[in-house]
Image 1 (spheres, rainbow, N blue to C red):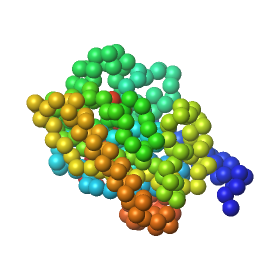
Image 2 (image 1 turned 180 degrees about the horizontal axis):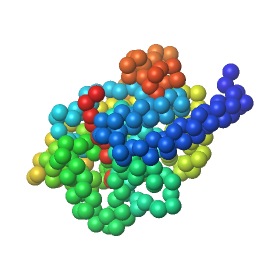
Image 3 (image 1 turned 30 degrees about the horizontal axis):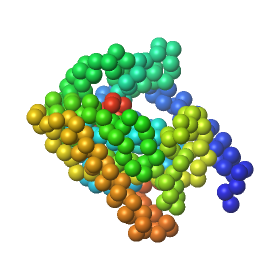
Length: 291
């Protein structure tokens, strides 16, 4: 029986394991910049999978993932939770791009810099062309950059309004746009309120709710890519990407109504949970690598 005591106990135990895992990353961050790209990617992927394993968060992937051999692409995802970047990183290694200026005294900022975080200063937010140039160059080099174009996070039930500015680099570089739909559900297939950032919860409160939750499933739907051309209108492209994400969320709704709650078990190769070995506007930059 999942009473108040068991939830608190679960949260305390997971919190202790999470603290140790963060210490582990601090140690890895010292070596991270000196490792070759392949080793950095392996470490990043393994660390994020272990993080989700500690939090008992599973991942189910639907659709065809873009591959590095196909060249760079701009991944446009809906923003639901602070977990989004960790989920994407557990699928493929992530290099974060932060729209906020780093604070020299911030431990979090130091860790991100040590893990190849690319900071885009607040000044760049007023002059997006400088940020777009940086991202455009990465796209031309074959990188896959993930952005969260919504103005506000949602609970994952629907896609919010997509701003068009984040799509300009894809047009300039002439690469694909790959919309991704994200949603979090509990073990019974119901929308998870623990993971959502809606309602303006503090980060600490959100973390505690996730620590105490029995199990959360992260649903990731890769929808058909859109080809961006030099003559493309970024507003049209943004609406098309928003429509792709909305379609992915609709597919999840259809499946939820067709499948009984007890049948929501995931295939072993797609699931990250405590029973398995597994444990992006401009937010993180997702580096797709061949496995």
